[in-house]
Each structure stands twice: as C-alpha cells, then as structure tokens.
Length: 63
Image 1: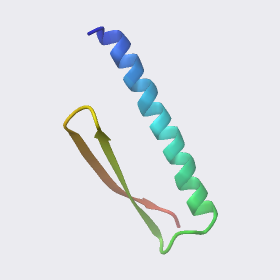
Image 2: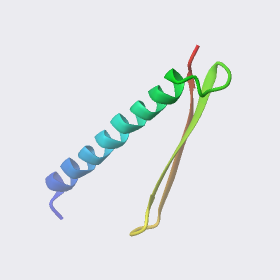
Image 3: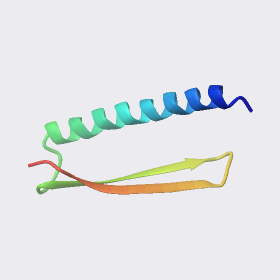
Image 4: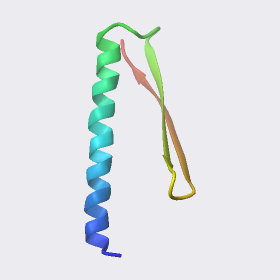
C-alpha cells in the first residue's frame, strides 16, 4: 500500500464529507427547519467493503 497516496485520498474524502455536510446543516438551519436552540446531529460512517461502523454524535447551538 502506498501510504502517501492512501493518506491523500482519505483526506480528499473527509474534506468532501465536511464541506458537503456543513452546507446541508447550514441550509436546514437557514430554511428554519429546526426546532429549539440546538441542532442534534449524528454522522455514521460505514463501508460495504470492510467491518466499519463508526458513529459520531454532537450538538450544534443555533441560537
């Protein structure tokens, strides 16, 4: 395995996830489709090619 190539591909994927996720969160908040002062979020990372099931949960203050 080429570590440098793998690392670059992984970073590219994570950047895409981060940028697109931020856009979706901003859109739902901007459109007023949230309830309350905090937006609870959950991100699940899975792979059909490996035993990968990673969950990250958090809360984003919106007020």
